[in-house]
Image (cartoon, rainbow, N blue to C red; front, side, top):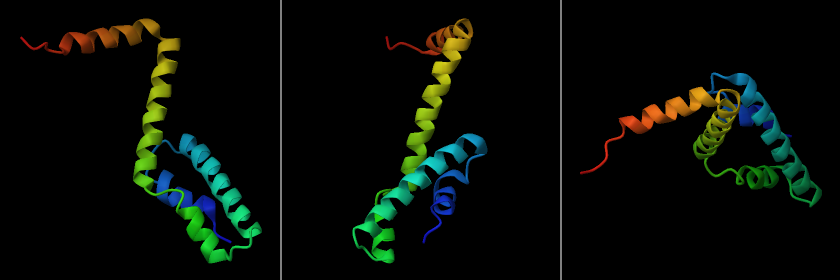
Amino acid sequence: MPDWHKHVWTNLAAQRSDGENWQEVSAELAAHLEECYQACRNEGLAERPAVVKVLGQVADWQELRAELEQRREARRKQRRFRHEPAAYLKELEQRFLQLTLPP
């Protein structure tokens, strides 16, 4: 049986420096892949075709990693606004002032 945790960590999380959050994400994804694998096996697929079918669910690991990072950044900004609204708004104001409007 495949080691889904190792596969996910190798393809998704190993490049991240903030390991704690990515350990949680990779564990959830690995559990999902394991469930899908077991469902394929229960349907009568042999091990190799089941693995191929499950791995086909993630077409591009880099794209998935980028999407997860974007969502993580959005959550970070939401938390920052809730905990430090004045600092967050000041940063937005500074960014806005740095924009140059076309003539």
